[in-house]
Length: 233
Image 1: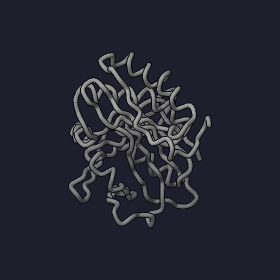
Image 2: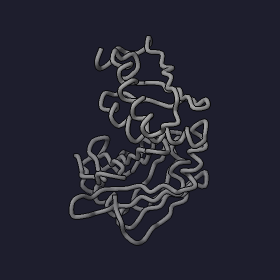
Image 3: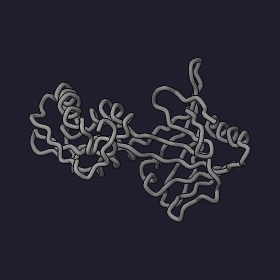
Image 4: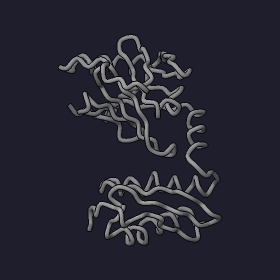
């Protein structure tokens, strides 16, 4: 069952690995401590809405899985209603009172201190996760080389380029910066693609050069020979 979500800044809530939702602004933030000293906050409205969606589910799903992936510059949050028995050995479990929250090991640090909210406006409604600034800073420290050029190029890839190539099942990642030269790698539908050189020349090079004119060269280090002959081939 697909549910509406805000057009911007939203996460996705799936109903038993099916439907989706969006984010909320209400008073009354409740914090729940879990192992590893992680803290996850729910506004009253967000908590009530999770319970409401669970009550509507015919399968009686009573656990909420919260996860985050993607770059710290453009995180992708996902909330999924699941059975409590689906907990993995490495999951962190949060007792949110009316329901159980499961957080996968890879999302724990990035979700530490985050607030889950639910927003309703005239035009849209849905869940939203607001990360803790300290957790965001820590995640950025772990993504690899740092510096203004790295961060600016990563921002262009995450917010302008990857959303476009994602429709073809691909992604373009920044793997290294040497002086004013950058090194990228294409994955998924971009790896081995017959149009990858055109994508690099007309798309990546143009957009990166416009946004970050300091970049003097872009090198593609993708092993295209091992790609799966994707979308344009």
